[in-house]
Length: 274
Ligand code: SF4
Image (tube, rainbow, N blue to C red; front, side, top):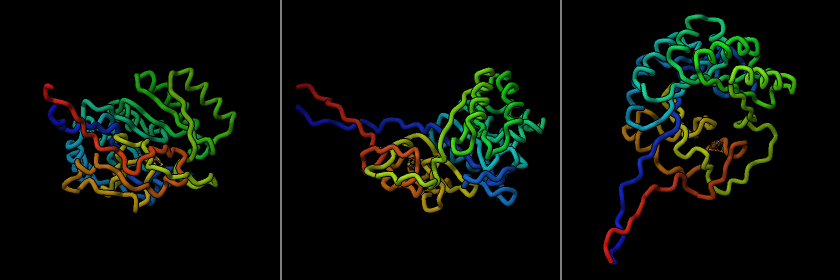
């Protein structure tokens, strides 16, 4: 019997690449760590183009455009068209509070033209119930997948029921979650191993190009690399050996039991005859 031989590393594909095109927002949700209201910063168009260039180096399935509130970026329509042109085979996803989508015809048209899915945060904190009621039928009639996400700490039971009924009527998806990245008095997680929730799942790219391999990790110390690094594509799939700052209090912590994730994807095969 001859020794085993090593096959090439299995092809890895990222589920989601998310570009945060602005830290501006038209709301001031208490729990939000991602936006700075009107004081935020927009990603310039040429920077966005360069980020798209970098993303061409890695396989991924969905491109999320997000913020802050991405629709308040002055170049939202143009950025959306560019991204859709560049990645015609990826699912285009918009994360929004829907306020501008409901009030601005040009933004609505850009959303209908360039996105397949629209994810909308909706609760008392977002204070956007009327706008969400307006846009759900329009988006669904256009064949868009619509996901309404309510933070349980920020919505009444009555409003939750109304939203669920509205989604049911129009074929939208209603999901709820907790404020997963903030200490709201919950006990600390026992960090026995690294969280495997994000293995080959998410890459979030900030306005300045800093990268996070988790949607919830966004303390500057958690940025392991930038989109500008020469070996960016390698780093996206490199093993992760440290918790992020938010893991201790994150509702989404899922213990892998491993001290390094993802596990190296090396396959072995017996090749010789006996
Ligand atoms: S515990 Fe939370 S912050 Fe940490 S990697 Fe998992 S999802 Fe991200």
